[in-house]
Image (cartoon, rainbow, N blue to C red; front, side, top):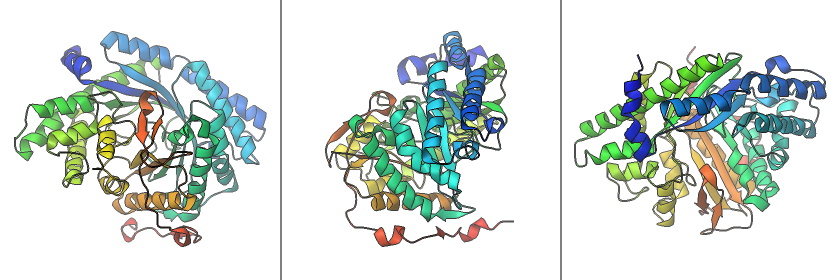
Length: 454
């Protein structure tokens, strides 16, 4: 049983260590909105989302007041729009009207972001999916709260290199379409391999077709809590270190479970999963990088960094699954550069490079996240980076993702400001050697041998 004692036990974590419920995300199926008439489709989408989520923000704020737990974001994820819009949308411009509808209803119900402007193309693209992908730059330029994602590969299907090549172009065009805002459109666009159906975190959230009509997923975060706990065991053995992380993750997850259950009951919508991810913010003391330094690194990027991150990720998951039977999403540790002051410091100290970040993604929860690169980076180079990261996910049977931001007009060493949870980022160098002949090959990279398990 979860009780109020457990909530009171977390008061210190909340007041002094930046513990928060990062998001309550309501997933909503739009499959019953499908219509061949675009105007009717848009109206159905608006009405369904508004009806389901009208009280989401209000309930989140009420729970926050009742339990004293900060709930930072209230968000919505929907069925991938490439599926929903296929019958009505004949061109990219048609899909953009749906993006605007999503933005309008997000404003109306007051959520921070709405995710699901997405396409799942791990094995091939339908004409509708290609149209949606080609609409992304303009869709993200004309909306404020819409987030987009594209899944280009999986362990079961391999990598769709045609989609990878196209996404290199789309990322670059999105940067150009939002150049007057520091290319912020790219901060709302994620390219996945093995995307999960139940992820509450933006920008990659969408409501998977295997999910119920509506669901409540909660994302909890607490890097500051873990760091403080580890300060008390400096110099102790790995056994003590691991036990401390597990116990802390257990307590944090219990808070998320309580909030999720309460929101589910108040909204009369089933509870889905708790995603325990150590998702940092730009706030001082809310950094995954600081945890890695507390484990024993002089700076993130030093030898031992990947091992320390692997340890952290695994113990967080072990503690989380003891606290809830429904841990899901991406659960583990995020390493976004712009959203983590410690990561920014490591880049500025030249301890952390793109190549080391890629190595770390073999063991973290997501991948190359919120990384600013020079605005003149070629589309084929971006595609190559996406391919590398997707290959890590495919071979290791894990979710990986790329949220790369080629900042138009800026070069290595300059800084781009995004504001809020997105923070700021130094522009880091990219390998100058080309991969054009590789990414311009057509077709897909086959699934690995260990995918054949039937």
